[in-house]
Amino acid sequence: MRETRQPRDRRRAGVTLIEMLVVVTIIALFAALVAPRMLKQSDKARVTFARAQINSFMTALGAYKLDTGTYPSTEQGLQALRVKPPDANQWNGPYLPQEIPVDPWGHPYTYKYPGEHGDEPDIISYGLDGQPGGDGLNADIVSWKSQ
Image 1 (tube, rainbow, N blue to C red):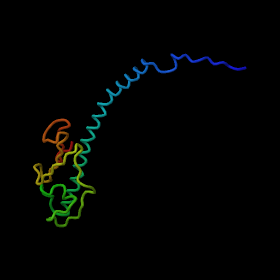
Image 2 (image 1 turned 30 degrees about the vertical axis):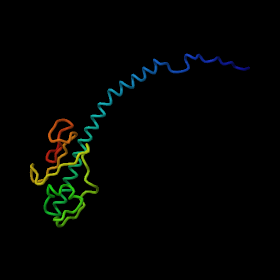
Image 3 (image 1 turned 90 degrees about the vertical axis):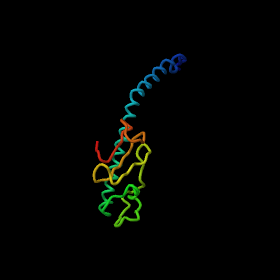
Image 4 (image 1 turned 135 degrees about the vertical axis):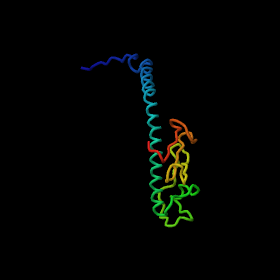
């Protein structure tokens, strides 16, 4: 005996416009709630990464000083960790495995020796705006403070 199939009701064959709008609305609400939190985490990660890079520079500068007896001058800058300065006796570098990176916002780090905050060099990332001072993401990240 052969079974007969009834044709599908065309109205129930697909997704209605209202169902699609509900799904799109739910996705939009989810994105509106989650996206700002994700962006804040990204900003926090950049600050943490800048601090880690500054700490890496300070470690390399410590090794440089052990070998040469002094830190590189402001003019020599962080590049002295990669390329031997002409007047650096006992230089055993390079002290960093790759080129001197820029900060997470694409700005070069500022290096000063002698520094204004103790016996060690000052290394500064000026944050998102690349300018001294500022608050929030524009705040300076400095070698003499660990926050």
